[in-house]
Length: 101
Image 1 (spheres, rainbow, N blue to C red):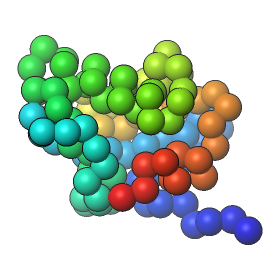
Image 2: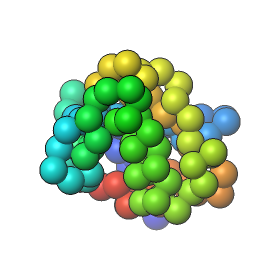
Image 3: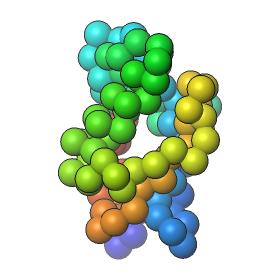
Image 4: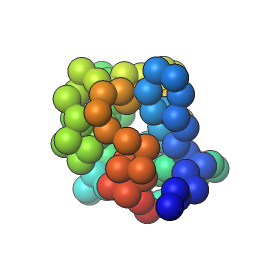
């Protein structure tokens, strides 16, 4: 039985693309819900000197149990809307399950 993939998750030939909307400066880093077709994530780090981006990569790596070097930005480093690609042995189903809002 295959689950319908969430709107914020896309499987590509090279990996799995996540469309995220990030809110820096939060009390806790966590999945908040959906926002404009993206998965909304609040991040503890402030939006200065790339700290929120670094925290996002570290947090995703920990949540998904994927080495950080297997997660990369495709776009949005300087915006709240970000596109990241993950590759390696993780499945889109696993990502959807771990990060479900």
